[in-house]
Length: 261
Image 1: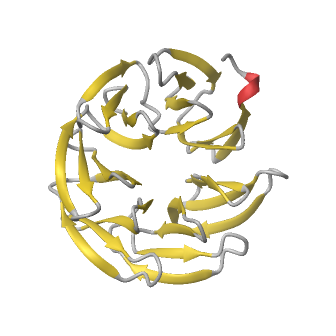
Image 2 (image 1 turned 180 degrees about the vertical axis):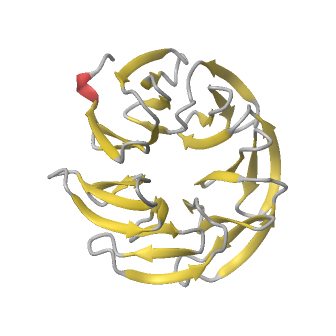
């Protein structure tokens, strides 16, 4: 995730930790011990911590502005008037001002691995069953269930579609935001889990291969950067990609003008 002048990326070894890498200096300026996921709001950064709580942070200092108990939540998204986190039996919608729970939405998923909120929907992956649920934020109800592929994991949203990495199948599913139908399945990409939309394209990680660029107009795939190992998280901001390698505890910074277009 990118915002407030830096990339917010999880690095695992030796323990779970969320870091902010400053875009100007490349230095790590903030660390959240136990942090597993981040989401950028207009006035703050939201993070999940150790599967126990969700915090709202001051993006400059890392000070905790509020905290809400969210047992089992390792992922989150901000948008559509709420903060959305997994919970036992579904997801919880938190009020972004108070942190109070305002709705619990039942979802029949064994393991939720990502959420992505937009004005027209909140999208939720179910890794075990290989599917994506769509929640209407106006009603807090599930309105669609879309089979995608084995290991459905990370989500990216652009003006064209919702993009899903199915890391066990090593595919990327493209879901039409109007019809909830998969219009394209891209083979041979996605096993690294990470995916992000930015700079007029979609960027996806493939384990032991690297980062590829998907043209959203044509679905054409072009190799962008060769990176060995498990390049798990991908963030976009200010014409650059930020990629985390969870096996080595590294974050790569990739200007978009260094690779093929």
